[in-house]
Amino acid sequence: MSQALQSPACKVTTLNLDHNQITDAGVTRLSQALQSPACKVTALNVDHNQITDAGVTSLSQALQSPACKVTELVLGRNQITAAGVTSLSQALQSPACEVTTLDLGANHIADAGVTSLSQALQSPACKVITLKLANNKITNTGVTSLSQALQSPACKVTTLDLGVNHITDAGVTSLSQALQSPACKVTTLRLVYNHIADAGVTSLCQALQSPACKVTELELSNDQITDTGWECLRNLKHKEPNIKLSCDRSEKSWRERSIADRA
Image 1: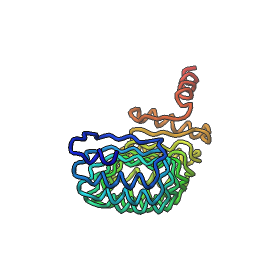
Image 2 (image 1 turned 180 degrees about the vertical axis):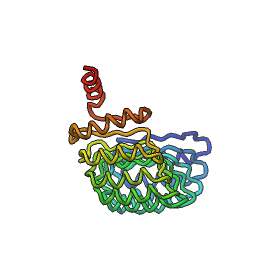
Image 3 (image 1 turned 60 degrees about the horizontal axis):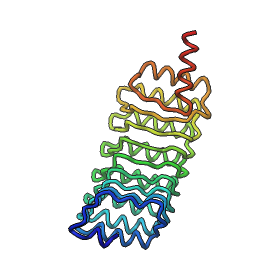
Image 4 (image 1 turned 90 degrees about the horizontal axis):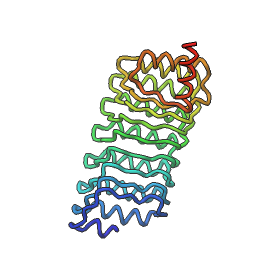
């Protein structure tokens, strides 16, 4: 495959190699191909393989090559830790790196990895606009560093997925402050399956009503949201009808509340 990608006759631009038990050795060969001027791959999906930090280091080197054309990179469900993210973050800060979509979902990057990424996002050279970090054991500490990055004028992120982590109301408060920054460009925010309760929902609702906030789509899970939080969300939906609110069982809940209101 890697040899074929280096052929001038090869026209492959989207390469899906998910669920293939690919190891670091395979990624190293693929990384060499990506650095060939003849390689035309712009979207690379190596989700659900056996890639570790060593493989990510090879891939990061390729991303810094002026010949590499990859703009969409899916690395979810591998064995990547904060160490691998550090090398990837260095690549993202290279002017030659063209990556605009980065999916690191279901790895092991934790707060340390998010901190490295946050530094990269503040680089004027970083082009990432879609960032998916679901299921990475991220806590409020990681969210705080990410919130600081989102307030940087250089940060270009518009879509942020932090679902299935360990974020509580304190982390959401930091994020809410960032959303109210004129420099923050986030329009889509996914926070499902964290540990967010009424206090976090309240801070989010306040942020989304700020003139500076650009969020048009918010996704939550409602396992810890009580009537107080639902009231905030319902008021937000009334005041900001253009914002799309998604929540577990939310459509049913909105309908039930609408019927109750009419009764």
